[in-house]
Length: 259
View 1 (cartoon, helix red, strand yellow):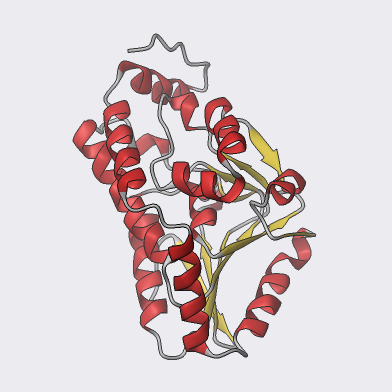
View 2 (tube, one colour):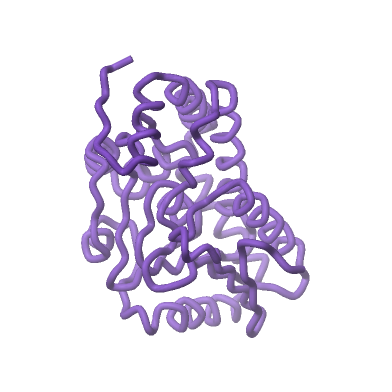
């Protein structure tokens, strides 16, 4: 199947999924989310494919965030629905019974960082940068980022990143436990595929059971995700969010007023 925003290739039962919007730094828009959902469902259902790598096209960005231009028309209900759509897809990735690695090349910000965290683990190139800058728009991460970031790096570090909107580099992400390995960009995909090649020699049912057991070990129920989606919907209808989105689109500093 051909897609508008995604490239796929298969080698030795490993699927490589590349978000292909390099001119937009691979930003997640509705088309990307819909096509990624189709790719993931086909991957899970395939009797041939054993593992997958998700990456971004070009050398600048894995995924530099959501497509903010799509936020402007959203009200509270629309914002909550968008958040739940992203959460559903990323939960599907996290709970896939086959391993999915994020190969992070460049910026992984906002929804891109959330997508990387939904993968079973992450390998980063030396130029990778991670962050959740949604507060700059008057928002919070809406695709599971508040939950996964806290679980992966701890509450204190997660809150620092969530509240400042600051980015961290690949070495810091490694030290925080956000990524498993940092490698030169030229070897990023070969390294990811080499790890998956080892995993693919193991028993598939055991692999699926390990993923399920690890996910259950950190499960906190759905309350956190529901709260995140409700908060995203509430915030996107505020004046501050409208100002933050407009400022982003107009490439200026936002003037927030707390309403």
